[in-house]
Image: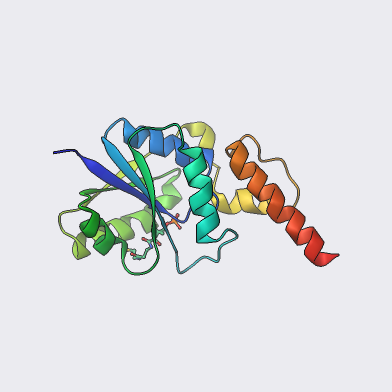
Length: 167
Ligand code: PNS
């Protein structure tokens, strides 16, 4: 049986740090499904459809990757529905751990057959988080080293729309 995993996140936007984790996951699992989900603690810059389009573009040349959207409900239920036995999460710093630890144990409580696998991205992505990329990009800063060109384009478009809206 093929070993498959899901890689959930809000991906607002999808960064090169996310891609690094995805590539590492593909070294372990035959199939990885990126799952775009909402985090009730965050408000998003990109719509679900925009994030779906950007991730589809980023993973276009990758084999064994798929992208899906969890519109509502629990990730654990979705993982069960997809038959995924592993949830991949990237951890960059020690401060990520507390939240990840809670989520992993809760997901295990809800779906005992699932195991969360933590992967560390390349150290050059230690400080790359979607939130800071969003902030820098919306203030006109250069984030081209941290995102795929198609994500950069979409960020530029958002910035333009903001300016148009204000003027
Ligand atoms: O990229 P993020 O924001 O750290 O990802 C968090 C995410 C989306 C994976 C988490 O909020 C999630 O699983 N949301 C779906 C709803 C759910 O199952 N919540 C309970 C998690 S224990």
